[in-house]
Length: 391
Image 1 (cartoon, rainbow, N blue to C red):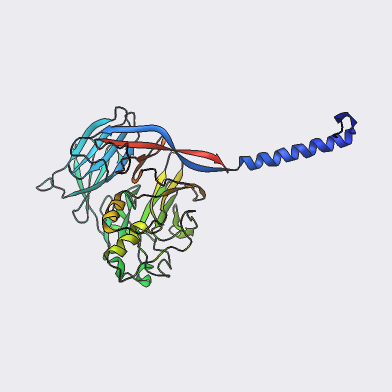
Image 2: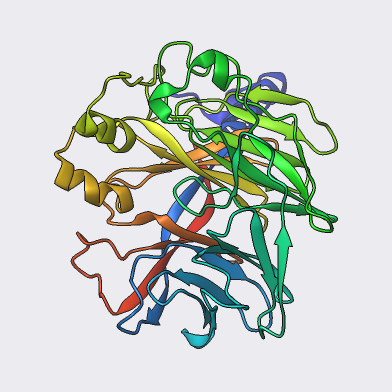
């Protein structure tokens, strides 16, 4: 039988109250420990498409203004399409001549600094172009690419490598023009990842950012990487390494930061140097790996795209996996690269190669061929909202 409260002495009662408050405080602290997660939101963007525009994009960029704009690279039309996101309609198209005195070669991509400075990338060696939204000018910029390297390379998905513009210089990805199966660890560890190009005279100089030593110590790994930047960091994410390579602002030295996905094994696979086409393709598209890294300036976080292992496929199935991975997760890291959380999207019929960051969050395409609700004549994006969750 419990004792009536009135039978406790004042001293005993005070001790009990202190004990209860202490318990509540501890419980409250545990509940306040939070993590971050990306959750599907009901908010969508649906853009009608014409017959010459694919529902799979080869380059996306969001630009914030009074009229929010979404830029889309269309290789079929050889154009950069600009959509008004308020009306969700085509606003205009930037088209360019391939040959002649005003020809730029084959259009391969773009980068939006602002609406008065839009960088256009082509297959013309060592040359980029600058224009504006009105296309009132077209300025070629010749770049002196370091000897023995190809580039500068500008890529959207899967290995995002947008140029980093600071003052009158552009930091851009460069690559060694060698076959992957021929690269040795001793060679790779000496290679540079990026170079700084002057936008005034095109002169270049290597950054001091190099592949991490020991990247292929356990065997051959794909040398592919993604490059992203916050205002005070340049960060590199590699195909076969849990760690991130980081260079602080105004500091040429780099350091490695642990950032392992919870869905990838500790030991990442290697590839045989005598691999046939099917083995090579399975390594690239079905083995556990890291691909894209992008920075969300609105929430000051990095998103790292991770791909858990899936069963090996035949070549025809792999061809679809190139554009439409069937399983992936997204790591969330703060501006100092502390892992805040990771969200997995297996079986959600989303397209991780088609994403962009806006004020509301990370938008991801739902135009997956296995999505029963997908419409071929509509470019649809679903909002992934960044939330705090209790753990």
